[in-house]
Image (cartoon, rainbow, N blue to C red; front, side):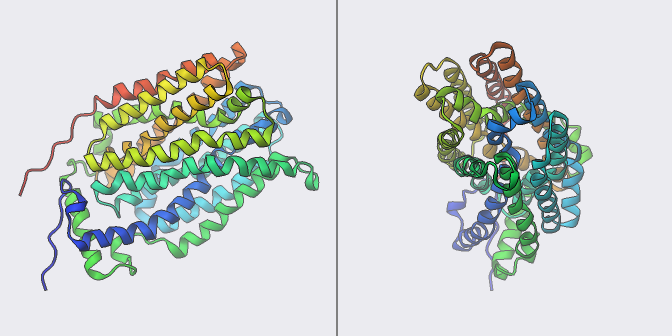
Length: 439
């Protein structure tokens, strides 16, 4: 019985044999919906503080600067343990390690309800970052075990639409939960944290029974499908850069360039994410419930655009210009939002901003995972995400400090626009990846 020839990273998957197409369809159907749900829950627990802030800040006595500082502490806790977390994931397996992460962060997320002032709020955010450390880069690494390079940006985009879906669904959900104000003596924002932290706890136990660590353990694939996938991934690894350990990878200037690109992108990404409800409320003058519902529009636009951009990037097998154009679009949206004079103008500009900035990450992660392999991939992805996520502490602080000083969001949004513009410039400095020679 003959075996199918492996495909190379330069061969479009659409030209592969039926075995390859069938295998990828099965992998997508098995993994991506579940990963999507897990990441949606994780992301909501990370950013629901933006919705809670509509009422919480006054109760806790948080100024805009204090709120931004506390929000940003999450990323310092996250950065502290991210690399060791991903290296442990590579050693003990994704199933056990991701389950451990989800159970702990679910408990900490619900415990956010006990914050009583600026110090306890900051401490809980720091602890939440420690608890969640390693989840996102762990998922990025996990996808490299299952998807060939030519499928990777789409795979990342599909699970990362959870960030946009979280805004579409999580905003109104958070608004409704805050209507429980006074029930059992709890404030609305306390109910928000308590209830939204529970799904992570439950899913952590589900992960143990559902997730499969590696293709060779996938009993839901046939033997020929497992063999095809193993050869396809081996072909990708053979064309990756000859950087096989984390120590080797960290010495490469390219790794630091990736860190800087992701850092600048997260300045804009989280600057908008943590302040969007407050900015929308400022534009519209609406109450808490209607503000959270209106905040869903920019996320809905971002969800559609990011999938289209990732699909086009995979189809064209081009990354740099897709990232650059998306970043320029996000920067333009921020500048337009800073000059908006009506609620409609402001909301449309924020939709343009989210569509551009949110479209960067799925395409971006196809760059480092195409040139790193082995331990370098586990440590390198975590290192990029760790350093890059510190931008998440800078973006919210820019908005908070500038708003505290000026009393308006216009100057803050215009200042924030510099970050995605820098992403466009930096990503074009990434050298083109050489194609492997034809066999």
